[in-house]
Image 1 (cartoon, one colour):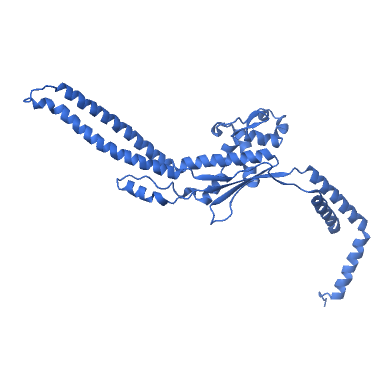
Image 2 (cartoon, helix red, strand yellow; image 1 turned 90 degrees about the vertical axis):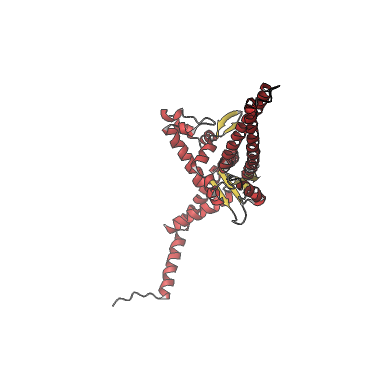
Length: 338
């Protein structure tokens, strides 16, 4: 019967044979190490440094706080002022909002000044990656432009495709939004790019775009309610002014009137009732309008920037020593394995 077991002595003998064989090929292995080191050094020269722009912001708490009494007072009049904009903008959802396609595309259409020329961030991204050099031979891509403040809804199919590629690269690799600690409501945005200015401009523009969208959406209910109350106040005020004028006109018409003809005093009395009623209504509407303004101030601002990216940005470069060591290890290791 065959014995599949192997003794320790046989293992040692086999290892010695392999070591002797590899030592006999030392020239080839050294050549692989040197070649790998040269390739690693070359890569360190060719590889562009990566710049990272970091922006941190704090999210305002949604709790009523000191406004609870004011909102309770408003509810006593039957008016729902909406103490919160809803839970859709919690910290975790806000993080995803930063990486949404709508926000990134709007940010890419933001205008910036580069070499005295006004262009969009999307155009700057295309120039950084030298895409236009590859588009010169394609008549469908050669004349495509992304003008500042362009409406993405009017893009052509080609433009949507290009923007989709840019968005995927940014959201998958270059854009990171992290809340470092759940107990602390501070979130950081990191944008990486081989172009230092693009990383800085995009990071700031994204925070500004999301902040505007966040504020407008979160306070939308309070703003609509305040606008309705303001229209009602203006309408009642016009009616009150008209009633006051009507009282004066009616009094003028009954000046030196015969006391026996009281029926002629009816229009003046009716107008006087209108003045009293409109005065009471206007008083309550003004109170509610002021409470609505308090609620709107509570809802805004909702994002407070703490730290902005400042030039020079943090740079990550593939060092020469690192390239030599990694290249030599990989080159020698591959030949040794072969």
